Amino acid sequence: MSGYSYEHMFVFSSARPTLPRDLAASLRPLTLAKSRMMPLGEPWKALVPGGGLRRGSTVVVEAAPGLGGLSLALSLLTASSANGHWAGVVGVDDPGVVAMAELGVDLRRVLFVPRPRGAWAESAADLLDGVDLLVVRPPSRAAHGVARKLMDRVRERGTVLIVLSESGAAWPLPAELSFVVTDSRWATSSRLEARYLSVRIAGRGEAGRAREHVVVLPNRRGQAAAT
Image 1 (spheres, rainbow, N blue to C red):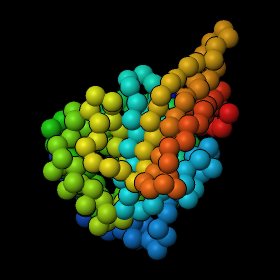
Image 2: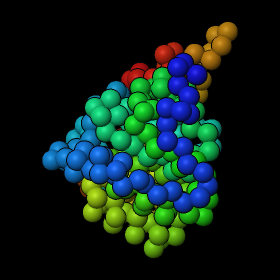
Image 3: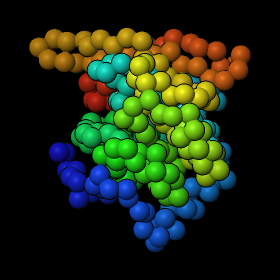
Image 4: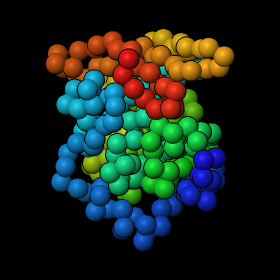
């Protein structure tokens, strides 16, 4: 596993996790940092309005199964983790830690709650005291009230919420930023070389109107790149 193992990460069981107080206290200075933008790596910093993710915002990544939505969501963590920020990943059974490392995510700064089941929203809320970015994959369409409560808490804490959803279970409330994967194809020779994603990116308001882009995720090195 390229030198990584689950001993390098915090991995929780299906029970609702409790973030240790000393860990939460050690992480809080980053969570309350003055900067209102979380950095993005390539190719997203050139494609996203403002070049970063605003603290307190909700980002939705929508993709049909197998189109690369999880890889896209995780690639949004790379620059922030490289700059010392913590992230949480809730509701992803097998996040593919080798692929995450190849993307550039610092696994030493990721908290995993792989199987929260019906307690996914509570598990996500519990991590907000100690992370700067939080990737959540609800097991089904989230109720309006649950989504609103979580988004309000994210806004209050200054975290970036990244919701991974499918078209049949869309996030019920408007997000500040959305990535919709409309197509995915692999370039092959004797093996899989790279995957090309067609992604529609949109922010709120006229300035953030949807624009279609093609990105490589992953490329031959396992990273995200522009075409």
